[in-house]
Amino acid sequence: MAQYDDDIAVTPSGDGRRFAAELDGRWTVGGGLNGGYLLGVLGNAIRESVPGRPDPISMSAFYLSPGRPGPAEVVTEVKRDGGSLSVVAADLVQEGETRITAVATYGDLDRFEGTVRTTAAEPELPPVEDCVSTEQMGEEMRALAPMYQKFEMRFPADGLGWAVGRPSGRGEIAAWFRFLDDRAPDAFSLVTICDLLPPVAFDLGLPGWSPTLELTVHVRAKPAPGWLKLRHLTRNLAGGMFEEDCEVWDSAGRLVAQSRQLARTPRGT
Amino acid sequence: MAQYDDDIAVTPSGDGRRFAAELDGRWTVGGGLNGGYLLGVLGNAIRESVPGRPDPISMSAFYLSPGRPGPAEVVTEVKRDGGSLSVVAADLVQEGETRITAVATYGDLDRFEGTVRTTAAEPELPPVEDCVSTEQMGEEMRALAPMYQKFEMRFPADGLGWAVGRPSGRGEIAAWFRFLDDRAPDAFSLVTICDLLPPVAFDLGLPGWSPTLELTVHVRAKPAPGWLKLRHLTRNLAGGMFEEDCEVWDSAGRLVAQSRQLARTPRGT
Image (cartoon, chains in turn brown, red):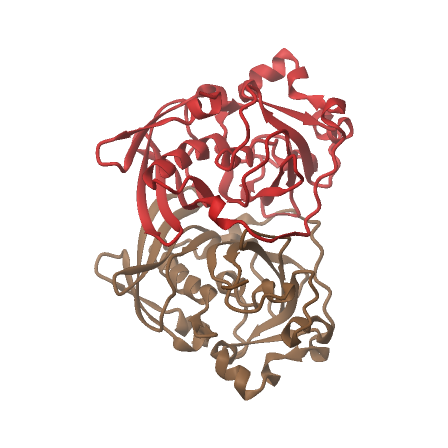
């Protein structure tokens, strides 16, 4: 079993609406569990709740309190099950406190093939071998971001100013992505992958933790095998909040996921 | 009372979690009730559920079945109430069937002022007086779209190709907006206004009804009085679905709302 699938595993308990999970402390960065990983766990319980609907198509998650490593429960409620899509609400709960409340549409992406008309522009990145890998991070950085044991990102050397106190001010961060155990990206894992890049506020000169209020992911196609390209973009920071759009492009040049989150700027900024 | 506020009115019944509403048949277009109007009704019940949190900040709605004119009920559940934000889940129900299931974050936008750094570009539209008004529509069109009794839009003459069989193919529709009774736009009404432009698929040569699967609105600031600018944009039509981004700009040139929906292309396209 690939590491990611093991990390998001859930066990049905009782009435088929409750699922036990064990949140893996290695999915942390800066002390907090990554929101995309939590969405993977929650989304996996939803998938178990609607057999025959393997793919998340649209998922909206509201983050109420920070998740902690250790036991968690996901409680699901099927809101609609008919036609070719199911809509399911789900809460991720720890110690009686809701961490995430979410709603999602699941279906089978194979049933939604057809014309592709994409005018969005694929991010231009230098070849993977010419980029700077998270595998090259020093010990200190690795200790701060244990989740880089799970996957690798490769950044263009000239797109790393935000990491050394020289943000571009454009509000854009892009990188190549793969799971370190070479698990192929699939439609499901995109709900996690959409939230793995560093917060785009870094590139506006606002380092620190940017807590997510809400994150919506649209999974638009099954990705082809190989490296993915990820790009974060923000165009409207105001009132202590900013939107963060993530695009995921596969090795065939297809835009396979689009997400948008609303996040708060780091404390004190 | 302004017409919009009257149309979205809800009456608490019983335990403070249930609200009765009467869906106004004039908010229809092509036979169906507008999704933004339904979100206004649902959002109004949420507002009543969390006193002191007047403004929707992020709202995600999943459309399960088409709303019909007549009585409806909204059932709310406060998921978190603390700090400066509340998170509330809500269902809009008719005849025992859920029409919309939604989650929203509410707060007081006055508490979220601060630096504004917007790199998004305001839509360029000719002056209001040089644009083509929905008030100039023929009787036949007005009968098909009773909701234009509620508000006025003004389109640039060269941005109306989609209405006469000459879509630009760019996937973009923009217009000026005001309520016909000159009710000032406020933060709340933006959840409705984000869904009032014609479906952006029209501009790709795909006329017809594009049912919304999911719509998320971020209300980013209280709009200044006066005409608003609205712009719909899509960049990824694929597998019979497309994303539709709406931006709302106020008369002071501020980006006050951003929404994204995932919709299905019209039947048969």
